[in-house]
Length: 188
Image (cartoon, rainbow, N blue to C red; front, side, top):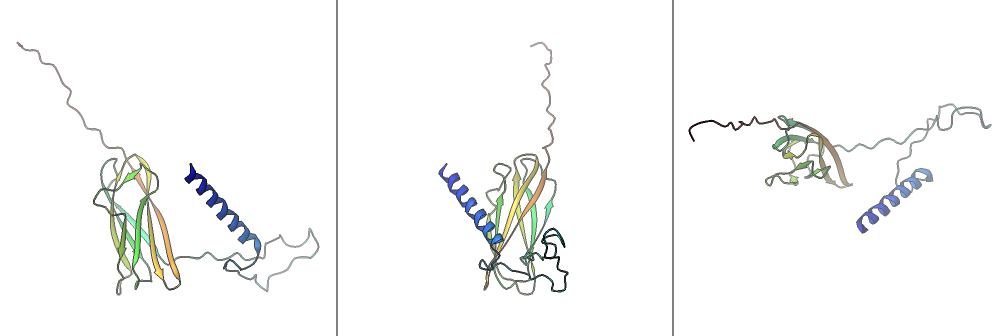
């Protein structure tokens, strides 16, 4: 219960801080601020006339991490059967080691076999930009389940992190026809 209370307080703090940073209008939090186009028309200074408020304001650009995660599922995912997933990680930053983490989004939906590591450090590459990993998971229920892949690269400017949820559509295991026990009549 205490863990849930601490998590709720942390979420409330982050939400309050984020809201204050968005409404504060200053660049104190390190947010990128883009100035509106100087050639854009300016509305009337009288209330109720002119352009819509905020219509000529540019929004901050979305920052993109230079890491790409692609995947392919090898075979048909079936409940209780191991399934391999090939993961291709690419980045123009190929002179640094990458730390890759695998985790399950929903408890009880997937498990890792004993032979599968949940974190791996990938060494720097020479000229290549793609690093391939194969992950094995065992679906525990049918329907859509998710494997979360997170990639971290430590740079001179700080840590770069990208996460991706890989959807896996799991089918029910096929029914095995059982041989019905039939009674045979005989002398015994």
